[in-house]
Amino acid sequence: MAAAVGSSAMAAALAQRTPAVGPSGAKAPVRRPCAAVRASQRATVVAGAQKREMMMWEALREGLDEEMERDPTVCLMGEDVGHYGGSYKVSSGLYKKYGEMRLLDTPICENGFMGMGVGAAMTGLRPIVEGMNMGFLLLAFNQISNNCGMLHYTSGGQYKVPMVIRGPGGVGRQLGAEHSQRLESYFQSIPGVQLVAVSTVANAKALLKSAIRSDNPIIFFEHVLLYNVKGEVHAGDFCQSLERAEIVREGTDVTIFCYSRMRYVVMQAVAELEKQGYNPEVVDLISLKPFDMETISKSIKKTRRAIIVEECMKTGGIGASLSAVIHESLFNELDHEVLRLSSQDVPTSYAYELEAATIVQPEKVVQAVHKVCGARGLVSA
Image (cartoon, rainbow, N blue to C red; front, side):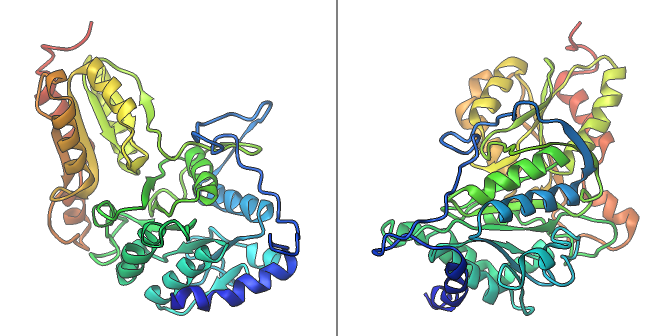
């Protein structure tokens, strides 16, 4: 509760510029919910919107800028997010536009500023807390677990925690074990939080906008190697459902489930598999909690085979949870046991060759498809 009290000064400062609802009858700022978020959070395309090409960090910055401009209760806090513009420039230039009360540079104290974010969310703001590296958020695990995820329940619905926890994670290029953490498996067991992993320029911006507008606490995973990936985004107020998977490629032989950077590893493998006559279906999970069982079930009932490709560790990872759910609910639909391709349960090496050996590579995906479908024996005509 100390975090809530500590954030009251920020809330009060914003309230001077943004009247809040109260006994005086002052009008609250009008929040126009995105069409995609307005009930079921279904994705929608703004009529007439044209696509533009940019890098992922630019798309995230644009989405953040649009939401801060739209809603004065949205604020960003974290290490170097203000003057410096973020370690990966996601908030570049926004400090000059919105000022120090909405882009708050924090000390190197993850547990402290995570608690401040929770308190800010409890008292009416919509904070975005950036971890300079997702591995550092282990220092804030208590705040995320016991406060962020549970306060809505433990307060009997008196408080909600509409906040986004985001930042770079995953295995980069020779960043060492401490900076190569994949925390999806750590956070998936926390009640009350949603997990979202972005993979493309388009879904990065659209999902960030949806996450900011959500009343649920969202842990938003960005991969450190995808910030400079180029792609197209929709202009206008385009949002995407936080709970829906994306069918990257339709196929009939086997369903390959993946997320984040593994989407690109899988698609490299698919290019080789197509030459060999295989027709795999590729599904980007996006929502790691909850799983989009509607899309997952439909795909498995079509292909009757499943491979899960993840960068997370194999023990207790996202793939382990998804495999268990598939075997429990779709066992009779399978013609082969679910295969999991995951990172090895070892600290990530600094040496490039050893680092590459610990994570899934395209050739491993090709081999898995051969094992599940047979050597061309079960390939679609």
